[in-house]
Length: 175
Image (cartoon, rainbow, N blue to C red):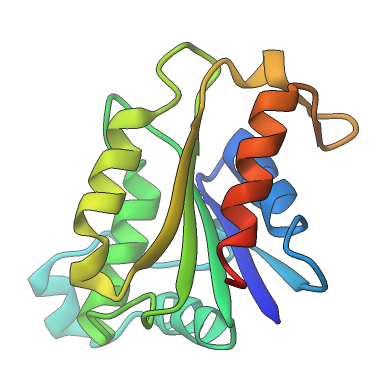
């Protein structure tokens, strides 16, 4: 099984990319590919820009990289209760090429933040709209107080309850 994972964040030290990577690696026997949304250069979306350039190459590359997956693990960063602008922009371009961006592939949606909210607002938005964009969400998990439960140096979860929850979510990708 090929699992594609990414954090919907442009941070070089993204906690959401770390969380997505960790969770994807819990899928037994999976070949995991981790994407970095910084690798998909797209201009700011507008209908005028779309008329000018057509499809953005970065968005097509993003869709191609997702298309090769059997399953997805996506962890959403939250900026002021919403998607980060860079991810939303890439996503908007991608939906203009293929509205079913996620291709009905089984997916685990995650979110995390350093604080107690766990980016639950963006996770709710992502899971609530998933069906409109080919999202087939098998499980969703919000991880609050990220640095208290995750060791960035080792890439491992330190909290047994969170580790169990993430393992159960990952197992749903093969069920």
